[in-house]
Length: 475
Image 1 (cartoon, rainbow, N blue to C red):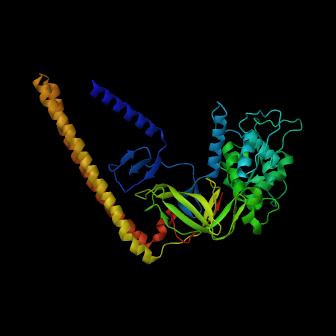
Image 2: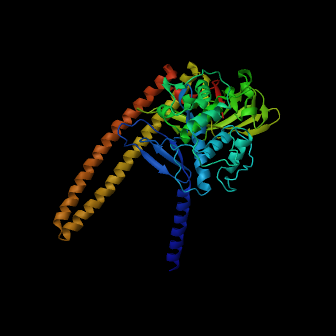
Image 3: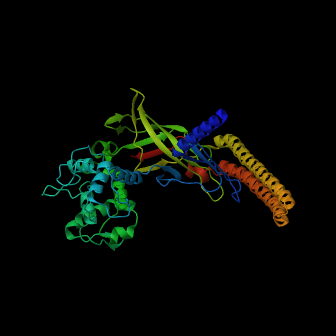
């Protein structure tokens, strides 16, 4: 009885541990290798990580590409804004499903502007903005900074949809761009639902180029309202193009964050990151090439920026590899002053793209090539062992059933079990063949890929960041 109680207690403990482990949000790290049939695909899930080998790799959608680096990504500010907006509404008890494709409300525009331009928190003194309203502090911040205004009657009408024309008028207040008069045209088509009082503002927004970042051009032109998603990208573009801010010249753009809440970093990388070799959690460093202002503190040229790899997919057949990176902190080496960097990025570009030199590629290729070949061969062998073990287990069961069913006077079922033995054997032989062909192809592919990397490195440069490459990051 005591033994039974101990076994029961142990089972309950393991179940509790498993429940806690499954409740944690897993990371996704892809160790993909070339596979023709998907038979080499394996998955291991634990409390900390999900490792997927071959097969389909789950990609996060919350990312923005680095210009000139098609397969290097960073977290998207615009998509994170939508996420923050949805979570704020849910936290406040809003039961309506948040739909980013629906028209944006006045409260949501205030939220976007306050977040995008880092407006200081302020109390919203409007009769129709209750104390527990989900965006009360953002409305106060946006109106206190002059980005938006309330109505003369002392109300803000937070849940009222705001028209496209009103959005353009609001954005135009934040920029100073030369524009043409007359009926607004965008992409060769006349803007619909724009009253004459909003012509100038609309033309200014069009001339600024901010709309080029907004998805669904036809709806931008033909709809009376912009969606929450479209405005998130519009404000993200405003955040990115801080040189448009009134009173700020292009020469002082690097210091524009002091007035617009935008942080711009120009950095030179000190480490190499690659979809071929990097892993989640790999740290990297860079140095600033210009002074930068973060949280009101000036970090001089030469300050250290630290980051990490947060997502990886290995390149393979018909599949470009990619990496996603995050910039964590900036540190002034002179006085050890350190500040955290924002989690999301409005834009990123690689201004000076470089390839590792030939000698470096030649010396490094044998090691990375050997490692990847061993990985493919090892996973192929382990898959073959797995197929053999499962097959033998199933054959043993079916043989046992053949004798048991026949001797208990069920010869029909016994013959069916015997047939299953033959079917399992045939399937195992077929799977073995697929694994051998796929594994051989994978090894040859990896060897060829290393030769291509040595001779034509530019073909893999889109999924790597190399030492001395210069990046411009706008938070």
